[in-house]
Image 1 (tube, rainbow, N blue to C red):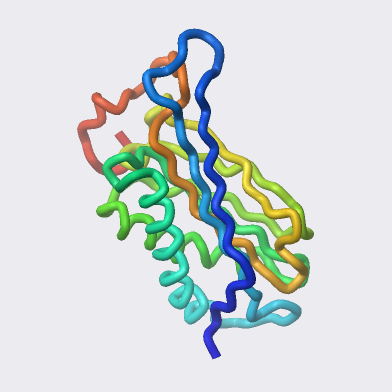
Image 2: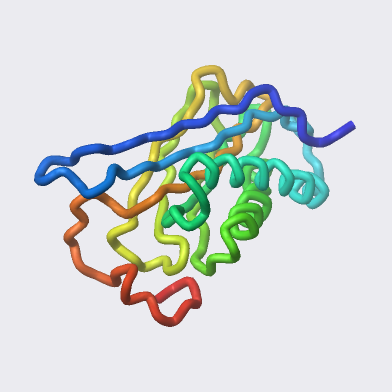
Length: 193
């Protein structure tokens, strides 16, 4: 039996048309692709989570492709992140497998950007919501692209489930004006500066 048993998928697209001040040249879109799966280790300790992490790469790839298509192609993606909410019969480490699986999938689909993929995870009850931080995918210190999107599903995760999410967006904050490194000044290409 497969380690990945999906109960539901959920796609969130948040489009910001205005933030006060002049209207932006284009709206900002942030999108989150979520999957709610059965937690194969709920209620028990499993010493070897590596096969689960490996199996999750295919789910990560599906979610990453969905986001790229939603945003009109990988050339439009400027920010990314990932999240996991583990049902209360699981443990934090069951969500931490997503660091590699979800991050690897996004990097592969997006052409190997170098910046760290931000993340958030929690063990919580159904309906719990988290703010997922995002930043620029080619350099972690591009201040204009520090942002977040709220994710959550009303009936998930149930106690023996995990909600995994990937997030991408097509730009920085509307009216960003707080200085710092800008996209056009990224030069080292090491994921930092």
